[in-house]
Amino acid sequence: MSRVGKKIIPIPKGVELKVESRRVSAKGPKGELHCDLLDGIELDIEDERATVRLTSTERNGSAIHGLSRALVNNLVEGVSNGFAKTLEIIGTGYRAQVQGSKIVLNLGFSHPIEHPLPQGVAAVVEGNKLTISGIDKAVVGQVAADIRRYRPPEPYKGKGVRYVDEYVRRKAGKSAGA
Image 1 (cartoon, helix red, strand yellow):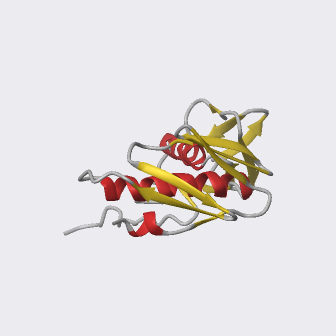
Image 2 (cartoon, one colour):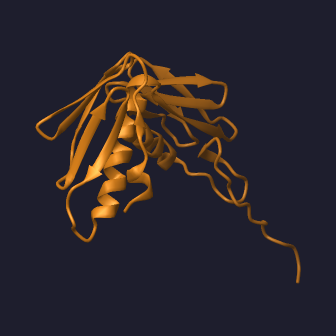
């Protein structure tokens, strides 16, 4: 039995969670999200709590149980609070700007990079920090990963795009002599 799958999902005030023919939808102050339940999983909603129940005895049932609980919890969390990822842009002349529904990045290439933002995702630039926010955790994380991929942090000077809480292991440069 999955430890994550057994945890109860609290439903905050103002969030409506419902199941219609294997499709879970959550509606809250930030918007509306939905996902499909996997085979062998049932969702029980009582008052202000929801529980994910495993009904199959398949070999990977425990993994599916925990995954399903995490997906439903992300729906509830997204429509009530939202998600955000903060990137740090480090390097001389490296900067980001938000222009409408795209981010323009100057990362030391001969041209600026224009990265379009998907619908439902917003970006804010404050100094050398770029914050990406939205209600869908997977989309927010994917946009942040795509932007980081343009110029990942390098180990010698640490220049590039990194997550704020990311540790970049530094290497020593060329040593003289010997």
